[in-house]
Image 1 (cartoon, rainbow, N blue to C red):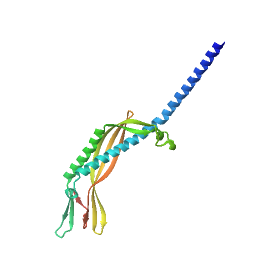
Image 2 (cartoon, helix red, strand yellow):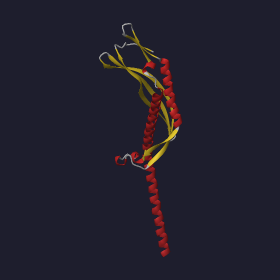
Image 3 (cartoon, rainbow, N blue to C red):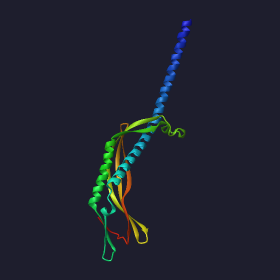
Length: 209
């Protein structure tokens, strides 16, 4: 009799344990279904931030090491009475510098190749109270890039009969992120001032490159 009760209690405990395990398994699957898209989106944001930093760091390094001076890029032509007749840019030197910037950015991404981005599960939960808190998980992301750049001349008034001329470099980098078996394309756009000066006198409307 006692043995029957023992087996009956044992069967009940096993059944309850199986039910609890099943409920926990269902909870884990539901939690995964909820968190996975949020974790993925946060990982993409972190990867984009890494991409932007990579572009900025590469360009700033080239600017500090190899940026040409204003006089190397731009020539201001004057008439006999010291009136500005034209502004000419050296397209060869500009193209050389563009090439250096483009190569530096793409080389930086080639060196990076793949890296881990860290995501907070607290942030992924969508609960503001847990935002920024762990646990944290590292997600591997692959990077590849293609960069285009172009110069733009910007003229702004700097006072009476004075014009500030800025030679700006606009950079557009297309970054392909490989994340959790998916490929996402992001574009990083930014502008840098390569050279700048203040021109005294009336600036003509036409520039020659």
